[in-house]
Length: 257
Image 1: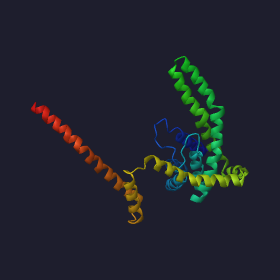
Image 2: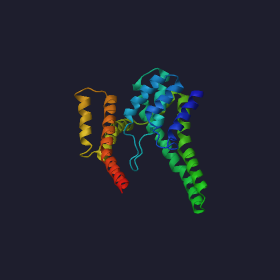
Image 3: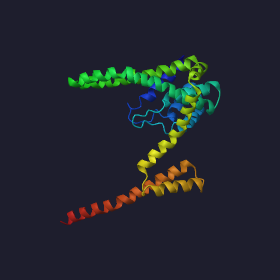
Image 4: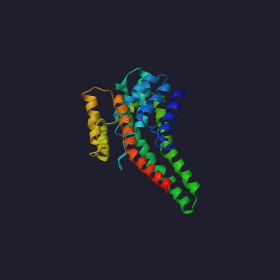
């Protein structure tokens, strides 16, 4: 029971990440590590979180498209994998359909619960009560989304993986296959959209440099990241030097004057 409550609180913490800015608390790598702490197996939690991070790498809201609820999928998938002593296969098998199922509950809360707080916030806004608007914002997010996910995660872990698998078994096989295919495409779509936004003739050489370092020189990703940071620092310093020299010349002219 205690582990179920703690896992529910962890999922609520992940959903409340925007209270602390864009802190990435909701990412599987963080949720997996925290789940490992609760389950008493931190290394496995981190390893499973890293594996699920790859699966959910492209899981971002784009327009009106809402990706599967990766927080609950990561927490429950990791928790069940650790509790049963199985590996990443179990975590992946459970995480993706669980994330899709919990998304249904999340949408129900956003459709039937959250609007009531939004309308109440509108009333406070007409009265010029900013504290009331802020209060409805927090309460709406808590009762309309956060609490729902926390309760679903806690109950799901408490009843055990067999019960969750029985619920998931009700979902038609063609729907599950479609969800798995979609989840496989999400990382590629996410990378494609990211490259579309940032790729240009100035960035392309660095992309090719990273590819060459990885494929032909077999440098690990961590080494490439460190190499990239060093290049960024050097380029920033070189770019700032002319401005510093120009500023210094202005100071000299003022002194002469």
